[in-house]
Length: 303
Ligand SMILES: NC(=O)C1=CN([C@@H]2O[C@H](COP(=O)(O)OP(=O)(O)OC[C@H]3O[C@@H](n4cnc5c(N)ncnc54)[C@H](OP(=O)(O)O)[C@@H]3O)[C@@H](O)[C@H]2O)C=CC1
Ligand SMILES: Nc1nc(=O)c2c([nH]1)NC[C@@H]1CN(c3ccc(C(=O)N[C@@H](CCC(=O)O)C(=O)O)cc3)C=[N+]21
Image (cartoon, protein in one colour):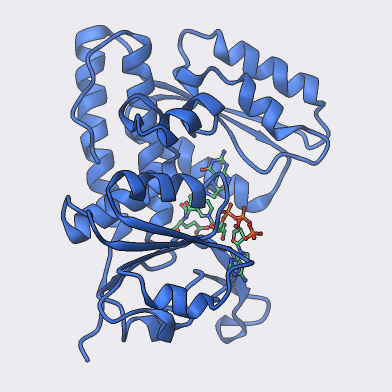
């Protein structure tokens, strides 16, 4: 049995970022404007710190103006809201991202609803959620992770996904639901599976496209993958790796990667798959937001 193609998310993300770097340079040349991204991090979750640092670096590399606000975990909800309000009104900032999860005493949905939809580069504001579900993807800002998954699927399978059976495992607002909306808009036949789904292995076996966004290490068995299916593994799980030395850990996805290689046609690795695409799509959204706020013409969509 031939082994699956490994989808190189890191390399594809690199090509997306190069294109955005070119477009940002052209914008600076013609309008004198640098896209501005503000990332707000409340608390000291170490994983969040890594992601926020990666986002900051990517923005700088694309020639964006990047601003990081790190607030202590005990910051009040009112202070977070007033920072968002300030960023909403800052003409140099075109994209606002509030890193989730927020500490328990802060109402996430209240914070997300305050972000101006035009600056909502995460695509979590109800206006953007509504546009996406209503089939008006082109005027929305689309959540970065599902958008990145769609780019990976199109680079692997070609631009037409119509008629494919797609199974999305997970129904979060961040990944599962917007992913299902995007695939539906591509005319896939979409199934959304979750913790109450019966016979999950059989549901997954029927898929031409599997998107796993569960957050449980290797819960999707390799033999659940239909012959030749395309597998996009969104999960990022840190597990102990004593073979690498005492106290060491490593990242794995939601799919049992090694076993899945024998069944899948193509599969994303973790790390180096969806993660880098998420960051690249944040750059895409920030540039899109900047151009719209400046009333400039839309550029060719990247997906
Ligand atoms: N690569 C990237 O850029 C990103 C990666 N991630 C990663 O993706 C994963 C998912 O993230 P997120 O969507 O935020 O997670 P959530 O915890 O919000 O959602 C998990 C979903 O998985 C479902 N689920 C849980 N257990 C099972 C099970 N045993 N069988 C089937 N379904 C199950 C849940 O079902 P129910 O609704 O019934 O509880 C829920 O819908 C995480 O590992 C996260 O770290 C997230 C964002 C970006
Ligand atoms: N408002 C908000 N928006 C988000 O988009 C958001 C969020 N909150 N909270 C947390 C999740 C998670 N997330 C990731 C981003 C990059 C990698 C990434 O770069 N991963 C690398 C490896 C990272 C590592 O080595 O730890 C990879 O998979 O290759 C992973 C996960 C964005 N999220």
